[in-house]
Length: 196
Image (cartoon, rainbow, N blue to C red; front, side):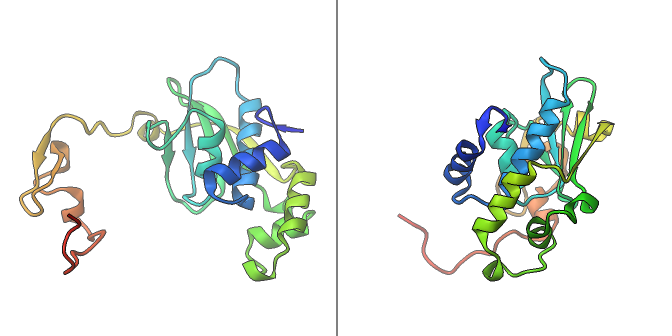
C-alpha cells in the first residue's frame, strides 16, 4: 500500500512534519488524494477543489503541487469531506468523498468522523490502525466537471487603490472600500503599543 508513492509510515511522518501531528483527517485525506490521482489520466495539469477547511487541504498540499499560496487549491468550505482534482483547462476531474455507508464497516473511523466520541475518549493508536487497514475502502469516487465559476474564478489583479476607510491597498475590482471594510472585521485594534 502506498499513498502517492509514500509508504503509510512515510506519509504519516510527512503529515507530522507539515501539520504538526499525525492528524487522522490528514491521513484519510492522503488516501483521498491518492485515489483521485489514480483515476486521472497521466500528464494532466490539475487544480484542486476542497470542500472543507479542516485537515484535507493539508493532505492536498503535501501530495500535489496544488497549494493555497499558488492558487491551484481552492477551498470552498461546504463542510463536506471531499476533494476534486481537475484538469486546469477543461474542468474535468475526479471527486473523492467519504461515503457514510461503507464507513459503517469501520467503527473507529466512523465514530471519529461523526464525532461520536470526544477526542479525549478516542484511542489514536486503534484509530490509526483502522485507517491503515481500511486503505480508503469507505471512499466514493465519481467523475465530474467543475463549474465555470470555479474553473475561471474571479480575476482580481486589474490594479490596486487605497481604501478610504482603513487606508490599505486593495484590488480596484472590489469597489470603493476593501472587502475587509465592506463586511465584518477580522480584527479590532488593540490599545497596546505596536512592536518597535
